[in-house]
Amino acid sequence: MTETDDLKTHLLTAIEAAAGLDALETVRVEALGKQGRVTALLKSLGSLTPEERQVQGPAIHGLREAVTTAIATRKAALESAALEAKLAAERVDMTLPVDVPLAGTIHPVSQVMDELAEIFADLGFAVATGPELETDWHNFTALNIPESHPARAMHDTFYLAGEHTPEDRERPRLLRTHTSPVQIRTMLSQKPPIRIIAPGRTYRSDSDATHTPMFHQVEGLVIDKGITMGHLKWTLETFLKAFFERDDIVLRLRPSYFPFTEPSAEVDVGYTLQKGKRVIGGGGDVENGGWMEVLGSGMVHPKVIAACGLDPEEWQGFAFGCGIDRLAMLKYGMDDLRAFFDGDIRWLKHYGFSALDVPTLSGGVGAA
Ligand code: DAH
Image 1 (cartoon, rainbow, N blue to C red):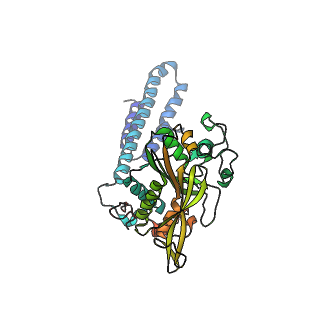
Image 2 (image 1 turned 90 degrees about the vertical axis):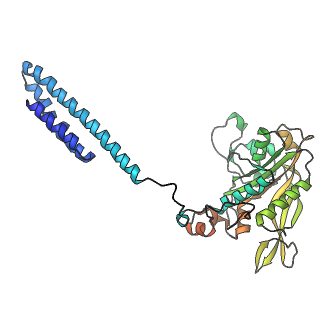
C-alpha cells in the first residue's frame, strides 16, 4: 500500500464516521484545507521528477477527487437527516381538538362582515369585491362625480404618485374613498338582475375618535326592472332587524343628496336611552331616545346606470352605503374607533370573537 492509499482509507473512513456537519467540516479542513494533508501532497508534486510525477500525479488527483465526492455525499446525507428530524419534531396533528383559549380571536370588523354576508345571502345577495387601489374614473367620474364636483374635495382622498395606465384615463390612481366603485365594477362585469353587497376597506385622510384613515364600509346594490324606494326601505329594515336582533327597529328616511343616487335618502334608526346609553331599537321620540344616522342610500342615478353601458329606461335599482366599524360599535358597545386598529391584545381578547362563533341566522347572527 502506498502513502496515498493509506491516506485515502483514513479520510474516507473519517468522512463516513462524521456524525454531524461540524465533524465533517473538521475532516474537510484536515484533508483539503490550506494546511490539509491532501493539499500538502498536491503541493509536493512540483518537487518530483517527471517520472515520479507520472505515477504520483494521477494518484494524488484521484485522492482529491474521491475525498471531495465523499464529503459532498456525506454532507447531503447529514443535511437531509437534519431536515427529517426537524420535520418530525415540528409535526402538527391536525386532528387534535382546537385549544380555543390559546387561539386568536376574530376581530369585530371581520365578525360583522360575516354577519352582513349571512344576512344578505338570505335575501339573495352575493358578495362582490373591488380593488382598494382604484382609478379616479371608478371612484368618482362614473359615479356622477365629475372633476369639478365639490364632493371630490369632501372625500379627503389619498392620491398615488406614479405611472398611469390607459385604464386610469390620465388621472392619478387613489385609495378608494368609499365602496361605491364596486357598484360600477359589478355593473360593468355582470348582467342584471344584480343583487350584491360589497364590504371592504376604504381610505380618507381623516383621524379622530370616530374617524381613522382606513375604515370599512359595506355597499349594497340592486339592479332590476321595476325597483322602487319601497324595496329599498324593506331591505334596509329587514337587514337592520336581523343585524341588531330586534323586531322593534324603526327607520326614518330623510331626503338627502348623493351624486350617484336620485332621489337620495339618509337613513336614521331609532334608539332608546338605557342608563344613559343609546341602545338601538324602539325610540325615535325625544324624551327617552332619538335618531341615529346609519346609512346613505337612494335610487341609482340614471347617469350611473348609463356610464356602465346599461339602458336606464330598462333598468333601475337602489344602492346604499354604510360604515361597518360604526355598525360594530353600535352593536357591541365600543366607543373609540381608533382602538379597532391598535392591535392591543387586551382589546382583542375583550371584544374579539371565538373562531368557532360562526354567525348564522338561526343562532341569531351575532350569537355569543
Ligand atoms: N358612498 C357614500 C359615502 O361614502 C355612501 C353612500 C351613500 C353609498 C348613498 C350609496 C348610496 O350607495 O346610495 O359617503
